[in-house]
Length: 104
Image (tube, rainbow, N blue to C red; front, side, top):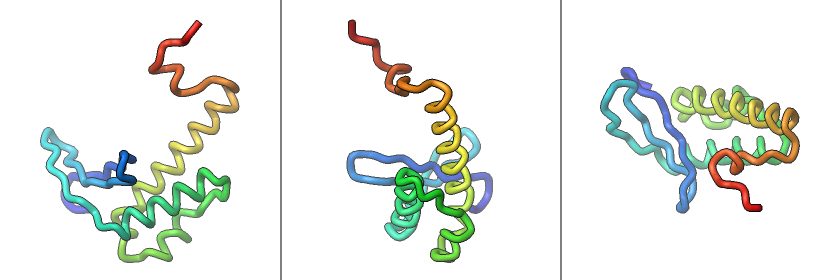
């Protein structure tokens, strides 16, 4: 990563998208390549499948992307851990309950 930027990873209708965002007021972006997105998608799919992938091991398979992907994958691990903690603490509660009104 160069300067004061951080990666922003989003999943849209067309699949995964990662952009580099400025930490400042501007938000000009630089797209990553398909290999970088594939490496990210592989990691997160392994998480969802319950395989608990190791960041260092995963990045060893993709050394060309390691510098940019390391903070993204570390954040994904922490986010997934928080989601799992939330699910254990509030079984049956959906994150959609936070944004959608309940039907009666």
